[in-house]
Image (cartoon, rainbow, N blue to C red):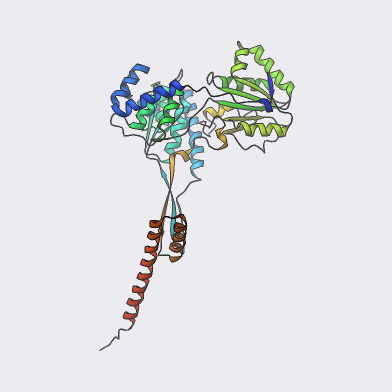
Length: 423
């Protein structure tokens, strides 16, 4: 049951060629027949036609008081962190002897936030996807979801959705990409979903910007001989609630603590063998250096550090880091503040979780003075690359600048030779 860091392999992604072909066929059909095709797929898969839902102010939804307070707290903390991130971005300018240059921060105009239906209303998905887009300044924030549970609608309203379309599955992604009813196509779509939703996002990413292609949810938990096992047991089981393809990996330099944890799972869970074979892995690292190296190699979506005896300074790759036994991933899933939409499948080595950065664009602006130095240097590079008309474009500017300077000097000399006679 316990394997070494050298023998560990990430569980392969369950890829279905049939899913890919089915989604490809749907996209082609919808691209040709539009709303009619979207309606047909919605009826076939979800037994309802897409419907626009008029959102009410959050206060008007009849939610239980303590739940309403919890959602308000979650929204305020997620908004605070998004605003903290937004402070890192600003439109700025500088100038030199050759001209003026600017970086302009501009929000994406129209975004779509997909919120899965599932067995329960995913309140947190509504908050985590919509609030950063509102903070970033996106003017149209359209929620797509097959669920019309009042709690979900209330959360979407509080998070700043400007519209809500009841629609689910891959057809929802197509509606965002191609437009639906009187709604034009969106510029960006974010949010989790099943394999059909993920496949549709993958196939449409040349038409619409996407946040990421999410794989199964994963957590890597680091423990030592002082870790409270009962807390970690619940964290493991919480991770397994994300679905049968989700993964919980526990790593330690102490075999005894791993064996104790295994015994706890066997004693408390109704089907421990199936759980351990499919979803939970136990990894032994011979020393702290190998443990850190393993964590960086894994690059997990969630990294929960509950080993006080080992410093986590050497960590480089993770979607989100949770330090200490009072920082469970479950808290981050709902309301600690940072976004819970994170890179999976080792993508944390080169990508980031959802943030306000996904909802903004970095534009640049330049106004060049008539600079012979820049024109000549750029022309030399263009000639070295063999691009004739690039070089000609630059050469003409250089000549035009020189001619203008000559004409300006002639005008100045002519005016200076005029004799003024005062009577």
